[in-house]
Length: 118
Image 1 (cartoon, helix red, strand yellow):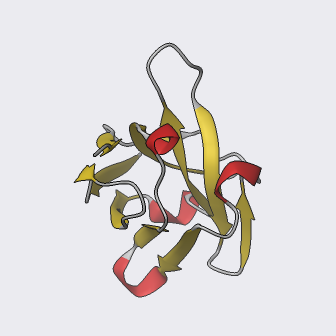
Image 2 (image 1 turned 180 degrees about the vertical axis):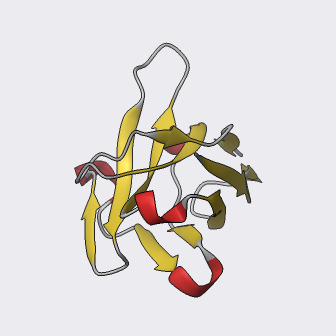
């Protein structure tokens, strides 16, 4: 089993930035792929970004050039740096981990709310 704990969500104005963090614990050897998904009210959960062993990355078209995913293997932590935030980025963001590339989905965090509003 793998436990994932997210932090860093909150309220930010359009054009602002936030950084989400997700710390993994437990059987971390089964977390070759880590990622971030989001789910807005009334919408399906969608992949935002994923990282494979800290080397390969994948992004949704809607966040390319604005979001950056990174992984610190020494700290078992994955980050999502979000810049130039837009109101349509408002959602609950979920950390995920697993073996599936590019959509890890074996383990999930509890979610953290990101609200972009003036």
